[in-house]
Amino acid sequence: MVRIAGSARDLVTDGDGTAAISATASLDVGIDQHGLISGVGQEPSSPPCDALVGLRVGFGFRSGAKELLGALSGTLLGLLVDDLSGAPAPSGYGAIRDRVMLGLPPLPPPPGRSSSPRADVCAGWRASGLAFGLAVAGEPLPFEAQPPVAPDLSSGDPLGWHAMPQLLAGQSRRVRRLDVWLNDGLVLVDAMFRDTTCDWDQTARVVHEYALTATLDADTQRILAIDAQPRSLPFPTDCPFAADSVQLILGEAAAGLRETVRGLSAGAVSCTHLNDAMRCLADIPTLVDQLRG
Image (tube, rainbow, N blue to C red; front, side, top):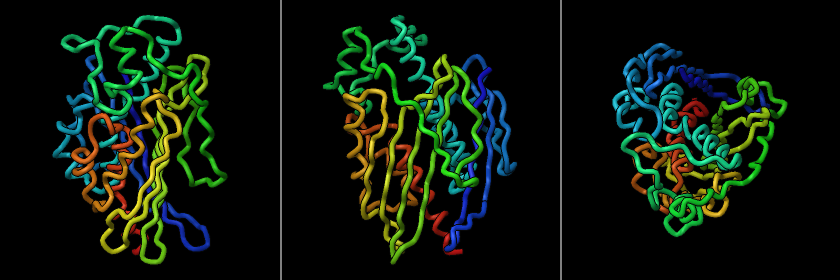
């Protein structure tokens, strides 16, 4: 049995720096031996997430959970459910890297799946890239021998991050942050996400990390400027080429990004994890409402 547990909260900080928690949510799902969700625990309890039972987390998850995600739109619980699409990614890359570093052959693909990656599914697997060429040739993938040790995120602010217990060997974690504030008719955004895996010696290492900043018009909440900074990615030779894909959402309204990002950023110029970071900007209107409230 595999377990995925997540928590989220909104903080509102006033002019003197005092922060207060304005909303919270949690989600706890069990995954059976077939990779399907077998049980769900949640807070708040409504709307119920029982429709998740029987779905498979990972790629394709959102199609099966489309109706529920619609009902949860703009909520913290919706953010946690939505992230089940990418939740297995750090564990998957961690397992692949472990086998490469140990000199072991890759695991065979599941029945009916090809052992070769799909060309141009993202920047990391672009057909002209080093990673794809090595995979096709049956050579070891170009992982960093020692990805960066995960820096401590604590900042001395007791509300800044959730309490996060130390990862155990073989475990993984995804963290997200989305900070929004108003300034002279603009919405300013500072965001990041990090995927971490834990080596067998208990060292937590960063698998994916991007920082993202943006400026929006406060009235239309359309994106006026945006920048993504790659910090740590699986294939340093290819993955960073996706950073410029954020420019594809210039002029877009934040509220619609969960629906529009996939159509705007796809193929060899994109990164599925960076796309998820852009999709999360759809929650900006909810946070702006709290600031104005």
